[in-house]
Length: 210
Image 1: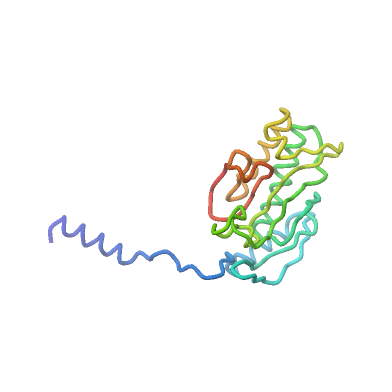
Image 2: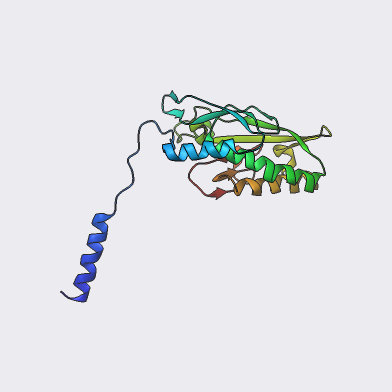
């Protein structure tokens, strides 16, 4: 067999052994494998001050979640939270304690006492647009963050602060970068017209940081 023919044979053999993309099920809840879920919950249990309640699997048409949790306490009150996946719970905790709180001290000289969320689980399409693909919110795999309240009572909102005062801009950009280091997908005001007033943080297929 010539060298060229041998090369062609090898390529055909490799192609025959390569699997195609996995089939897509009707209800896409991005379930974790049992060992992965157990490992995630074990990590949650080691996070200081984190309190949560495991939720039963939930099905709502094509929406739903497996291995969801309700966050009861992450050390800083976060308003508006519903069900989140275990990976989102872990990423949110680490983002708040390793990213948001240090950034507030560095750029605003203050402590964060409250975080305002626009929500987590919601059975809807991306940006609630008819005909669009399901949002990661439909799998409890995302959280939207709109603002931060300081111990002084001052509130830094994504909508007004992203292009607002210098210290607010630097703080929000720092927490945005910190989000990109901990979540798979982060979309803020520079991302598109739908995210002018909040940060979208999710653990879907990434990475994407905008």
